[in-house]
Image (cartoon, rainbow, N blue to C red; front, side, top):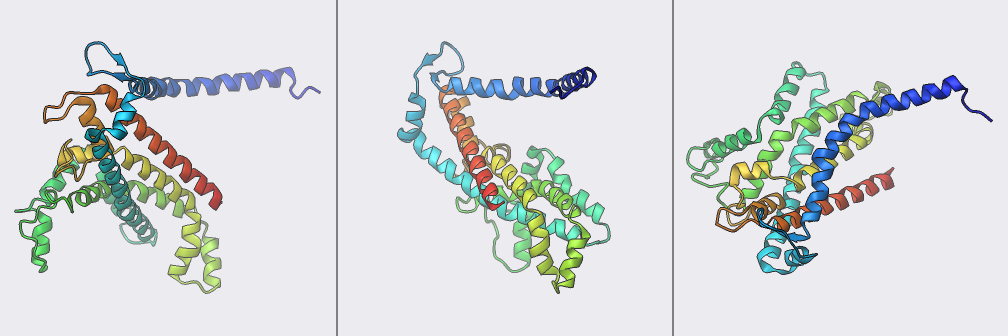
Length: 309
């Protein structure tokens, strides 16, 4: 049995060509700047190369050295642990704060549009500027944070937030979360706007107060948005580099307390300020492991999401 007459078949073919024409430019750009470099980087991980001269094929030696050579394995596991901590702090501060702000801004407050713009503005600012701003705030001598704490009776004079191994990574994570809180906030606002008023009215009829409405109406409806935000946070934090570079440099000061996989990769691939030569092959191996970690994390999160559904 014929499903399409000739005109209908031609129309489908024309639509397919239109869709392909619309997708092609984005696909070509993505392939040129993402897929090809990704595959090339994976291939480079099987070579020993300093960035100039001939490449020497070494197979999986770079990966073996990464996990067995103390010069690399110690720094790798330290950086991975820092990434996990960085992710947790960002999830707790950035996304919880973003959700709270979204709920408050949807309660009909005066000037809510103005405050949305204010909270979103830092995400449009250069990371270098944000890093420099927080360097000033965390300055131990005349930084705003220490001055405020001193004014309210907390003795923190000359305390170096970025120079202390116990507080440096938390301080950088706080600065990073502050910059990007506006993005999940806007996603949560969009999600809350999509919830029908009938659900809140039904909850009110059942005797639910404001907190109960949030727990039983708002949160369940925001699950897809929470999943998207969590995935973006995970991928972004496990490939973080810019804010740490801007505030602490590629050495992950102090004493590698803020070293992440991103700075570890950069320092290895392009050479450290200490005079260590560049190792492009080892850097590519680190990048491959980073990609694998991010991929596994996203897949596990997808499976968890599906199981909840």
